[in-house]
Length: 302
Image (tube, rainbow, N blue to C red; front, side, top):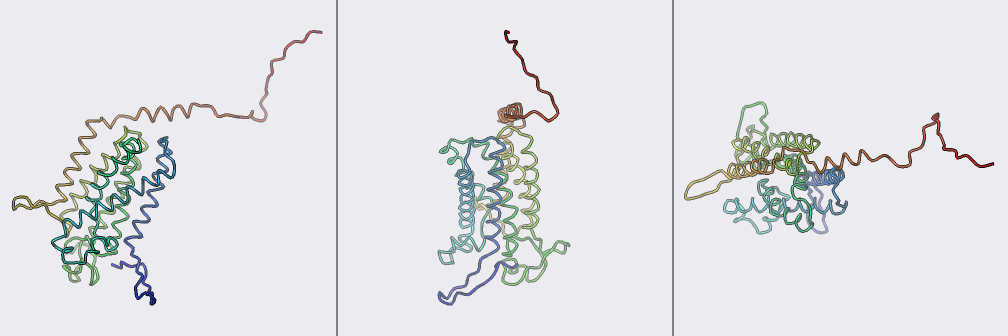
């Protein structure tokens, strides 16, 4: 729709300063995700400093950014990037981040990070899952302001007309289309709300991560028919929707993990920590005014 926050010309350098809403939304999601990580680290009694927690959040963000961009460039190379200047490969501010690539980037990098830092992968995956889905929910509004990742022409009441010059206008030509990016954003917010509530149930580590994989795979599969920018795997002259294939893999991985690790059972270690802390009496408690104190008086000779 309106991709730029503002436009300012810098005459000395003959350039236009045009920060995009796309980047702003991801910056906001990164800040909120950092707070989520810090809050969950404290709630789960994880021995992780604030600086290290922020480093982990930044690593997850950049791993997703690199994976999402690589996925997009690979699939769209012959359609777009092969005919553009090479610097366009790195122009993430113009859009073009595939969420499945971002998820795969996190799955590749995050276990290595946890291994090096000697942290529990299932526990940290639970925390990062909430950050991922929230980032997806907020980031989809960047797709909206860029005028991309929408659906087919529709007469349904939710249809939106995108202005000329956007990717949607190239095929819609002023007709209303399904705002698929908004549908997905709302669905992602619902998934985040579900994970936020489930975290208080203290399931075994990994449950939230598995539910994230399951729920997002279902959501994306439902919305794939309403996307006009779907990508395909081509195998032996046969085309397969990449979104369906990867969603199926994510769903199977989440389901397998839940049943293999019996993740529906309670996290005994965390519950024990909470119980011990709540049972420890507070130190330095003063007597309440009005109560009597007794002293043992020893008899003295004489």
